[in-house]
Each structure stands twice: as structure tokens, then as C-alpha cells.
Amino acid sequence: MIRDVNQLHLNPLMDYIDGQTLTPMVKLSGSISNPNTHEPLQQQRATSDSYLDQALDTALRVHHEGVWRLLSADERALLLEQIADALEPRLEEMATIEAWTTGVVIRQARALMHLVPLAFRRAAKHVRTAASPQSLSNAVQVQRAPWGPAVLITPWSAAAVVAAYKTASALAAGCPVILKPSACAPHSSGIMAEVIADCDLPRGVFQLVHGDAEVAIKLASDPRARAISFTGKLEAARAIAQASATNLKPVQLEVSGVNSMIVLEDADLDAAAEGAVNALTALSGQWMRGIGRLVVHRSRYNALLMKMLERLESLQIGDALSPDSDMGPLIHFSHLQQVQAACDQLTACGGVRYEPTRLPDLPGYFMPPTLITNCRSSDALDEIQGPAATVHMFKDDAEAIALANDPESACIAYIFGADEERARAIASELEIGNISINGVSLFGLHPQAPRAGWGFSGLGETGVAENLRFFTGSRTIGVAGGQ
Image (cartoon, rainbow, N blue to C red; front, side, top):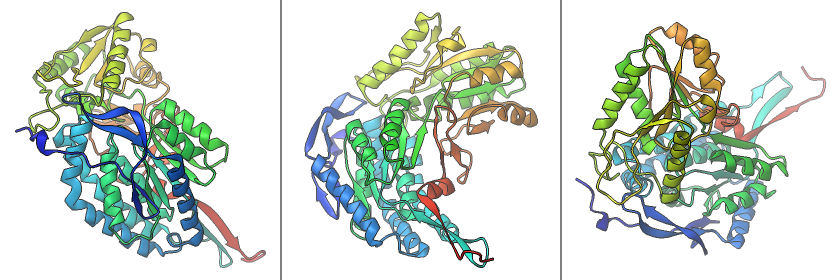
């Protein structure tokens, strides 16, 4: 049964700055909407320049005073675990809000929310073991010290999970945090901020601000911000990198790209078709690990295509809050237009479009999962970030590798094949940071696995250990001439 939307509501957007709860004063032109019905729910807002200035001043003061960075690793870990425990009762609320405002079906939203407290627990566990200084000798020691105020800029896709991982890592490292979520999906971060405000962290250690790309650039370019962690689109990543470069501050960029799935001639076609459909439709196709191109051995091309079309034909698109929906709408109208325009462009280049899934009789931002065949690789190099993928044929491993490496960005690749040794050999030739063999999952390959940006898919590495290292710098202290 679909949850009664008349019983749902969005709390007013609030800034959390220096221990105060404040209203973001700048009204933006866009609205947060229900993508299932295209009903506007709340006007988007941004934090004023004066409040941003106050947040930056507060974060720098907190860093200099040492009320957070000078706590022991165990003391910080205990507070992170307190946050994790306090988040548990709010997970259903967070899942419902993300399904309601971003179009992710409630079943997937609930699964993702379990990662939110887990992010804080993993960061707590890691900082206990990784925070001890390294002794190079009796006289020389290497410490890892927090850079200072960390600005975290998060997307609307998997908004709560990305915000939790960045926040937990930066806090574990000893950095004061300023979190700016996407203006399209800020409410799960608001709930997290409310929870953190009720925990025992020193005042001003965690702050939440709101706004669009303009606010993100202001934060990234300010010299008081000492480290920037960003997840989002390539164009925005470039702008953040340029803004950060003026002050030569560390910047971590996580960008998606055109992810490929290679299907070898010995692959289990049922498993490959199931994996491809899941990768195409999870989070309404709006996730960093979704696929942008299928690369299929010519002997299995038609058979795999038919199996995928059969599965897509039975897929149920519907209201994201319905437990019966396999896929929901796209987040907003302009994004729907962008995805449809990208598909139209591929069709204009000679592509043949397959859209077997029936759309619901609802007024929201729905589109069917789309497969486009007959495209040249050179026409399909741009990320679509929606439920659409091109399908390409290859004759040998070298051509499969070339097709998967042709786009300049990808955060993951998938390989399906019975011969795992061969699949690993192909994987080792891909210019991509993560490769999954014979499987697709919302949760990645392993909790401790790093995610590296290759090419235009980002800068630096993310992960539990990698994030903690990013938010700190090495400091070597020793006695000259000592052994």
C-alpha cells in the first residue's frame, strides 16, 4: 500500500551554526518537489553570506581552540558511536523522505539507510586503530594531524549515505565539519544534524548550511576552509577544484561517469541480465555505480538483449513510496529532460531505442529504462545519469577492454564470465578504480575497499581508511641526529 502522502511533511530547512538553529534566509528559485506527482513541496533555500561567514569563523575557532582535535581517538570514537545509536530510531523517517523527494523506491531507500549509522561505527572503529603515531625510530615519530575545518559537499543521489560517510570520517580525523547538502535533497542531512546537535559534541564541531552551487564555491574558495570533500557531477567538480586551488588546499573529488558492463561469451546470461537490469534501474538509474554501456560478446549479444527486454517488460515502475515498485521517478523535471535529450541525441546518431517497461498512470517524472543499440562508441561517451545505457558488441577481449576504456570517466566496471582468471586479467587492463566480477550490489565490493578516481571520475581515493587519511596531514617530529 502507498503511504498516505497527506500524512507526510517536510520540516522547515534549518541551519546549524555555532550551536544555534537558524533559518536559511535566501530564497532560491527552485522547489523541492514530490517527483511522483511533480507537486512542489518546499522552496529551496540558501544560507546567507553572513551566516556562512559565521560558520567558517566558528569552525576555524573550534580548530584553533582544540576542543575536538585534542580529544583522544577513543573519546572521539565514543561520540561517533553515540551519534550512530541516536540515528537508529530516525532511519525510517530518513528513508521515507528520500523516497518521497528523490524518487528512490522505499525498499532501496531503507536498505541504504542502514549504512548511515554504520558509517559512524566504522569510522569510530578505524580511528581507534589508526590514530596512533608511527615511530620511525626512538627519536623520530610521524603523527597524522587534522587539517582543520572540512567542508563537505554532497549530492542528491544517496544523499544521506554520502553525507554520513563524509561527516563520520572528517569528525573521526579531528576536523570541525561544515556540511552542505544538495538543495534538491537536504532533509536527511537535516535529520542527521538534529541528531548530532542532541549528542555530546562540543559546540560548533558540526555545522550544517544550505544552498546551491554558488554557496559551494564560496565555501571551497574561502581560506578558512582547510579541506574540501565533494561528490557530484564533473562540471561541478571542476569548479570546486578551481575554487580550492587558489589556497592550495586538499580537495577530494568523487565523480561518476560512463560505467561499463562487459559480458563475456561464457557468462551466465541469466545472472548477467539480472545484474544489468539492477545496475540500470537501482535508484531510478541515478546512482554512481549504474551502467552507461553494455559491452557484449557478439555470440551472446542477441540472447542477452532478449533476456534484458523480458525482465524490463515485467519491471514495475510506480510511486516510490509503494513497496510494490521496482523503480520510481527521476528526481525533477529538468533532470528528466536532460536524460531524455541524451537518449534523443543517441537516436539521432543512428541508435535504436528499446523501452519495454510500461509507465504508470501518474503525473510524475517517470521514464522507462532504456537500451539503445546500433550506436558508435564515439557517440556514447557522455554520462547520462539515468536509466539508459547503450549496447555495444565486441569480438575479442582487446576490443572489450577498448570499449570499456573509451569513455574518459567511470567509477566502476562490471564483468560477467565463468572464467574468473580471465575476468581478472581483463579487469587489470581497465582504467577504472573498481571492477566487480559476476555481481552488482548497492553496497559495493567490500566495506574496507577503497574507491579511486581515475581520469575524469574524480581525484583521490575514498573509503574508511582513505577518508581518514585525506582529512589529515603528516607531521614528522624528531631529534636531529637521533636514531
